[in-house]
Image 1 (cartoon, rainbow, N blue to C red):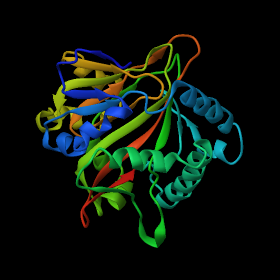
Image 2 (cartoon, rainbow, N blue to C red):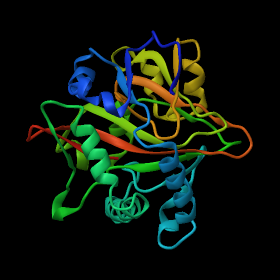
Image 3 (cartoon, rainbow, N blue to C red):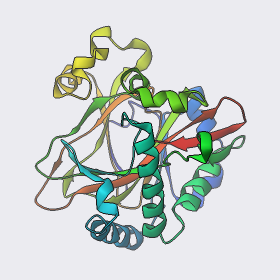
Length: 281
């Protein structure tokens, strides 16, 4: 069961896969501001999540997938993201990541994600994002927060295009003001690793917080400490969807001795030229 601290700060709906029929306009509700997000408890069973986490750990040690497993200040990232400066390299890594996820989930990752998201909208189709020459944007990456490492520092997704030129490739086809973030927890840590949502949104962000020298730094997380906070601790197998471009957030550092926080997820935004949402990261 999801553990939520200060649940009144934001309006989240928490439900099981069997109840998804009641939330068939969840995406539209988040976009309109009627909701601030959802948590689907037990999208994967605990056994499924554990098996996926075990297979993933083995996968990071094998070629060619060890090439897309990189250290960070909070642990590791697996896959491709548009924070890379070389777009050609990004698409090569994206293809490798999609192959890895297909193998990891026994050929059902994209059907699981697309199928789930499709049930949360009554109006839009869900698709991959495709660049010129049929190059496919990665629909997800994996983040591994490890004990003894830092938090994934405070950020908001509206700022990413300000710092990463590769975002121009996706902003030409998607309206990034509609961006939502999703992820599925494959392994819950012994302690820590909560998603922290701050009582600060994009429209009232102080200008000094958008300076490049504080991007993804502890200094900005310290600036946000006085703000009220909502913490969401999800169990293995749970999925979350929330407006990461609207709400300032971070992921708390993982503590404990051994267990990492392992998640897989990405972003979706509304297409400029069609009644659909497309995935990317």
